Length: 60
Image (tube, rainbow, N blue to C red; front, side):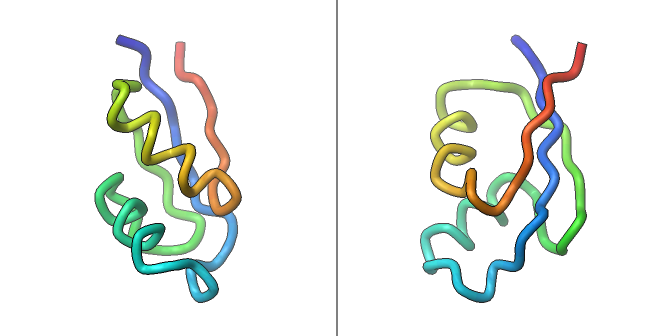
């Protein structure tokens, strides 16, 4: 599986409860925090729901 690096770049203050829950499920708790996750269909779906709050980089 491919790995991706996810960094939160925008505040979650205006996000919905579901979007905040997705960020926490991905392991992101603070602004400018980065995490590395396996790109599975589940994590890909969570990333798509919060794409306006994060940046995604592919790790080789």
